[in-house]
Length: 424
Image 1 (cartoon, rainbow, N blue to C red):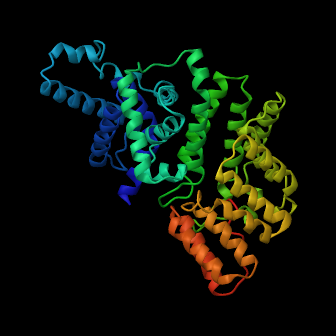
Image 2: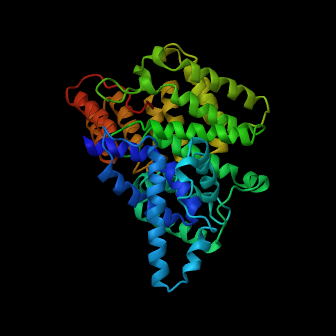
Image 3: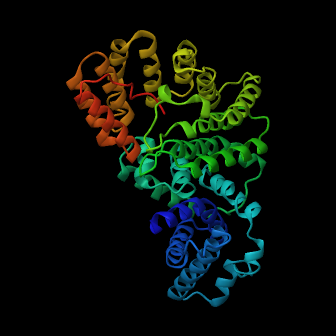
């Protein structure tokens, strides 16, 4: 229990601490190592009845001390002159005035600066986003590999190459100017979206929803909207995050089990977030330059306009998914549209459409769950059981596994099968 409590606080503080440490050292690997050392010290020192007033500031001080020690050790090994160490910190000792200067307004803004660094043009797009998820969101290599639908070894190599390329470029760790921000904002927006998505539906671990990641992604999206008030896609990104996050209290029951969209209590959806999201979306759409975030936000908004699941405007959602497939043709988008197709024309046509996604989504649990639900609706119980078995094999969270096991139990009891493919 103590370990779980500490892990929760360390995970929440990680983005802010790592961003500040990277600003201090200008070395992502050193910043990560320093954060790990600070976390180990916290595990030994923190108690629930003796908790630091500002956990992130505590970790930054401990991390900077650990980083300085590592830097000194490396300097001795390479016979660097003592003055080189002082020059590395621009003549200012990292602890000077630290406890007074570290506050929310300072070190939280470091995260956006770190995102722009991870999304530097010297990296390819997939490297930019993978590195952002690793460094800023603190996701494991396995979690990122799931998000990209690739093998963990492939993703580990991709991240390692990205770090080496950034180090070789010797980039200054500073906020990019307006021109550089404009060149990078698309990659940064995509990285923020994937951070939110991991919080909205975690790929691994005991929790289905990681609220701190959702809230941090929303905060960063708000910062981007302030940086680019005329950019409609950023308003679409923020609208999408707000509308999706509005359902957080309805997506799990009292036992921590996932509740599908069909069965959610819509009276507990956060109508304030929905209203803000719709205002942002309307302002974005008035510019008549639709992009993927605006379309996804429009899909989410369409769901919120129905007081009951049975009243959902599936024709409108299908129209929006068709547009999204043109702008962002990914296997997951295609899967979501096939789920909508089943609502409009039945599971038989939808099941036929699924065949083309079998290879790209073979490690994606939702693909197998959707396939299982279609097979069950068609009365093919044994095939449905096999599909849900594969969904169980690829499920990353405890909540997801419990949900699939519940569906399998209903299949065994020959009960009516709920549509397990619907997003919660």
